[in-house]
Length: 209
Image (cartoon, rainbow, N blue to C red; front, side, top):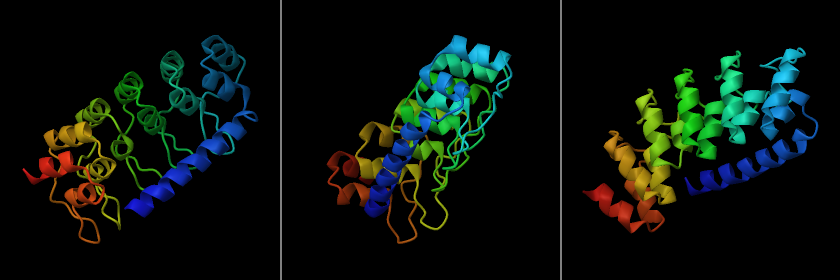
């Protein structure tokens, strides 16, 4: 799990680098969405730019707006036909990007437009597994996110991720949302084992009770 986390961190860094470099070569609508320039977005769509158009990494204007936390742009794009469940090269949806941005308002907005919280990225992680926020996680589960989903093969769950990262508030919330502390990975580890390994005493005590 620790190695997997390291690889995930490196992958995220590479993805962000690619994102930043590619932004300069983006279609105008994508750049306007990333900048939060709503008036420019409106004008470009009026001039014929495709609202669900993708770049070389299959990213849409909605994804750029969500990743940068531009609520007004996200709201306008959704109202005018942006599809919330399209996935980029990395398998990420606008919802996943909003979750990683830890923007509850955006997450709530996308869920209201029936964005599927159970889609998985290329690592087979769901939006709930990417969440670092108890509030965001509660929103996801309320709209149908499977709290006990486990990645195929490895058997990693959102509770295990939160326990390994030492996120006590998130662990408390997931348990309140009926996360199963007894689920095991393919190599027989429970959430408590990840907390023990990383010295998260508070979480260990919580999971023991």
